[in-house]
Length: 447
Image 1 (tube, one colour):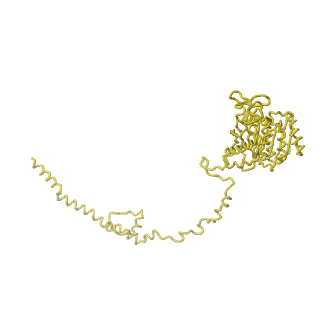
Image 2 (tube, one colour):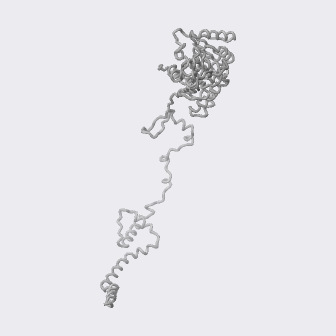
């Protein structure tokens, strides 16, 4: 049993390696039949392609019969005989084909067609610019800017103030109660520092039409007694609105004085150089608000008009006397405000003949205004009692208003409605006062 298994495996292997005679002959016949047609193609593998054959292959309509090499050669010979060669199908380009004739030439451009001058002339005044929007084209428009009215805290504003009262050379905060300190006014009433003299904010107003590149003016407004910046200066007296409606290239600065109190104290404006420090800090604030740091220089050189209403006469007078930049003050406007300090006003008028001075008054201040007029006439300074004409450098005008005009409404109704607006319009009509009117006057209704 053990020796029978190897013999069986050997017989199987012998049967696999010895094919029968019929199968061997069939295999050899099939191999020869497959190799005979490939002989002509194998001969051509080592030769360069025939141009005539390439041209023949480009005819998509001629059927290609690859069964025998004899048919391909016969077809090629017939095409060569008929003149359908590579050169016939792809002739060399002629001169006229490379260069168009005069009638076929493109429009010739000169260098002047591309000069900047010609390009600008072809542009309309308002060219249409393609933008990524739902509309295919929109005209370019300068973005509109709105009035800027804001409150800014400034260290150089009138309060808080811890110095002396120059009238008595005593500390301004002259009374205390526990940790609280306050000021006893001339009337005997006590105002506490933390309630009345602790607001350092300044109302800043920049009209939408203001242009820093043109001559302009900074209007500093000192409000009267019993006032706040929001409730009175902005909303009741409409000072920012008058600035805008004048159309003048002007901006407004209005520091908060004593908050809602019957007190005219000047605070830091009592100090020598106090007004100069206030204007220097204002320049930095205005440049920051405008978004252009380079505008600081223009703001620093801009002329100033001081407007004092009622109790605002005191900071006005001291700013002119010891403020340190009285030469930049181009005009002074007092609205029913000559309650004292006549010598300070008279001195500024006498020494600053390039500026103008306007005082409008009711019967409350008529006596002091007439006294100031007399002082000026004694100095040989001409005084006018008519404000209908234009304001000029050296103009000194006193205007008495009718009996029906009330002191409370004097900022919005004096010799005319919106007197501050009227002053700026008259000022901008005089080029020598260096103020430009850049917008038309549009009277806005009172709120």
